[in-house]
Length: 252
Image (cartoon, rainbow, N blue to C red; front, side, top):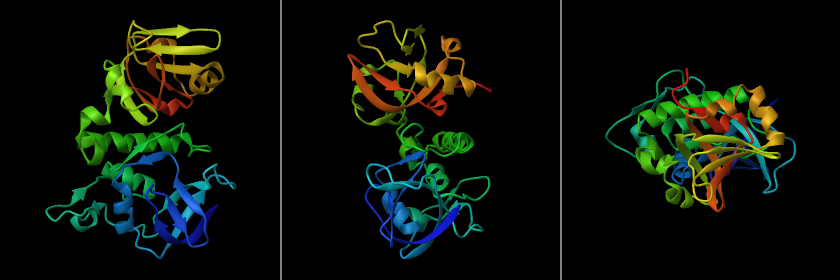
């Protein structure tokens, strides 16, 4: 169900604080440090917002995961230089005009798609659509994708991945082996398991990934892009709980 409310402010985390006291978290994405300022320019408050809450109850931080819709659906899909704080050009995003605030930020390269970080999440089709938009922004080196080496960590460089310990990261590399143990599946990106990067998948998450079409055993030798919170158990690892966290690079 679509609701309407008045925006009071955009806080420093990119959450939308409503006049009635509720706080909306943009479900499915993680915004850049510069995104809140762009959002304030784009969403002048007070402003009426339309949104779809994905849950009735807030999360443990008091935020409601939501899809935020643009009220002016006939907008141009070119972002004017003034909106970006630049005076020299516009940015043509291509395709149809963005219909959610999430897509607008992903298109600008000011947000990364972040499946597995919130519950409930947008439908899988929405997440995959955002991943496609993110790919376009990355190819055009917009926003945070201008620094490709930092924006996408190499699985061959565990020390660099360690720099993101406790934070969200996107890591890309070739799966060296797949380990299937009693309680866990491991996607190993090296042979030194005490040092190299690994993706872990608990057996209770495996069903969801397999139902989505992921052939986990078949990932050996394939180049994949993985996203999630970086943790450490000797070497750095990301736990995959959602199928959208693992992309096979170059797959048709």
